[in-house]
Image (tube, rainbow, N blue to C red; front, top):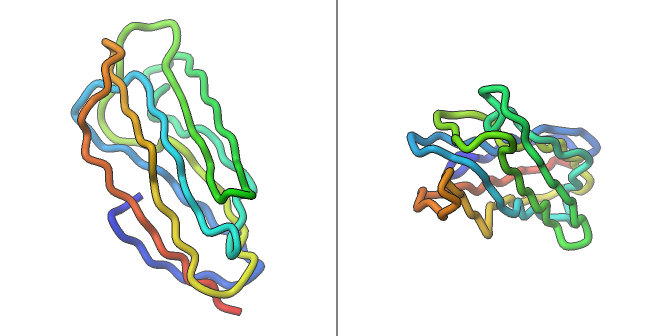
Length: 135
């Protein structure tokens, strides 16, 4: 997600949000929480993006939507290879429904990015969005 994004949607519509990564570091695994305002929006589907498997490697994504807490927990690792990938791409694609009017915020938290040596990398993370839902 960009540092700050504000978009407007109509109530009872759906929209997609993508969690992107852009880095020169070699990435082997990623985990994060996508926090959202569950009083206004509902995550109806969350799927793995193509970043970690861009070179054809197998991956093991685990994506759990805790709607009652307004959180999607995402974890994914490469399998069958000892190398990582770099560049830019989508980590996760989420479809939301706009259920109630008002401003709904989204943010990333608990982010861990791991290199091929299984050590956490110090990669700057930014991302928050506001979705304005019209009645």
